[in-house]
Image 1 (cartoon, rainbow, N blue to C red):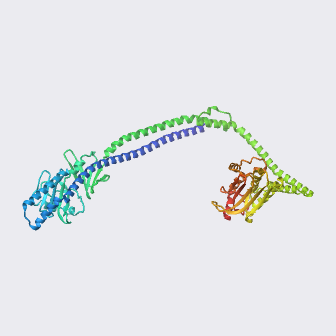
Image 2 (spheres, helix red, strand yellow; image 1 turned 180 degrees about the vertical axis):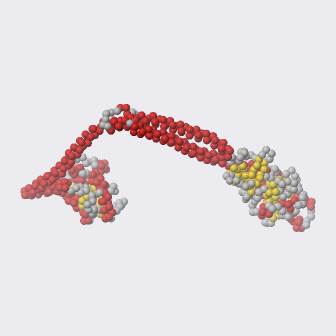
Image 3 (cartoon, rainbow, N blue to C red; image 1 turned 60 degrees about the vertical axis):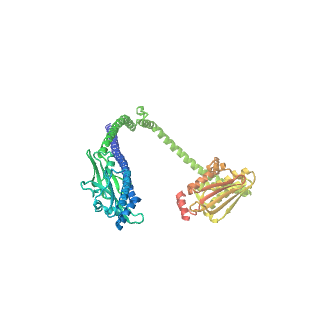
Length: 613
């Protein structure tokens, strides 16, 4: 009783430990997987949101920069500006002198230039637009809220700036970042310079250049539309190596040059050389994660509560029936086989209790049944021994009949007695599964001798042996005889007239077989033939219900023995034509020897086939 209590106690502890442990592990896995999944999803969604916002701002910047580039391109290809610069160049070269005409042309060109400047729609961002001769001596200028400038050293300051030569010599637009304004003397405000050469319309000669001062407000005005959390940062990069932090407060906005930190989200603009960057807000992620943390904690709590409930349910549903089963098993071990209804119920333990009750009630009947089985087994062994004795007595009697018929000159009776005696001797003595084909042929000859006398000589049997070596190959014992019997009873006998049977032995290569060389045995009769339904019935054993020995060993039996011995690729196939013929073909491997002392099993026979091949 103490041992039973200890087992029950340990099982209860195991149930508690496994239930709570499983619930705890499951809760931990859910928490970990949920945490990383939610954090990854929130980070991804925040990055996509930031990228979308930057792309919206970037599209505005792309449009503004594209308009500025278009204005600069217009300045380099406009024919009026080119004509004016060409006139200035000729005047300088020839010292021509009609100042009135030149001044009219200058005013006309300036008005044309000013109108295009206003038409761009970006005058609030283009602080200054200048068209100058290559030496800077003559120029046209338009600025915000100003008309025309006349300082003689104005363009000299531009041409002496460090950015001028790299920009004018670049094959296309080159963005070098924000630089100090070379023209202004009363402010340190930075600008984004644009410098492009103006070529002659008739040659590749440079006849002037266009200079634009772009205000940083172009960028800050677009970036001001972003909603930027307190701990987030926005950066703008211009050209190679120039990055600027966007700073916004109640008083002003500005761009301050600063290196790019790690973890920024990059959005390139369509205009080469410009990128927008943003560091996402960590506080925003934490705020969203806190909500999901509460949900995850709630899920984990319910899992643990569920684990406790499962533990209690298992304890209630297992402890009581288990005690009953242990008690009943103890009684059975003491020899009490009476039925105990208390351990039976509709649960799994109740099913076990029913099984124990049935087991305890049937122990005695099972023991009696075993005694009865032993008795039947002895009786069967006796019957088998008797069945072996009877053929010996029969073929000894047939031998006596044969000698008496020979003495009296009854040769037919003597031949039939001899043939039947040999058949019975093979049934009683020969237990081999595989025999040479010549021995199987002798069995067929004995059987046909009996059939020949039975049908009065109306049936003929002919052998066609393509190669004498075929007679040395091993085949299943009593395999051809059932096929010959089938030809007589199902082919020729229903015909109602004389018939012939041809058995052919040959070696042939058969496609799809390995090895390809096979032994083919064809049994062909000129009987009534068979339709497909009858062929299927014969192959399935549908005509094997007779009690005579040879009819019992039918076509289906032979086919199965061949497959079992040599492999499923070998066996019997039937070809027939109603009213004309039926041909049954054996496809067998070429086996000319068997290992001595080894049963003719599938493994040994096929190993020998591979050796012969």
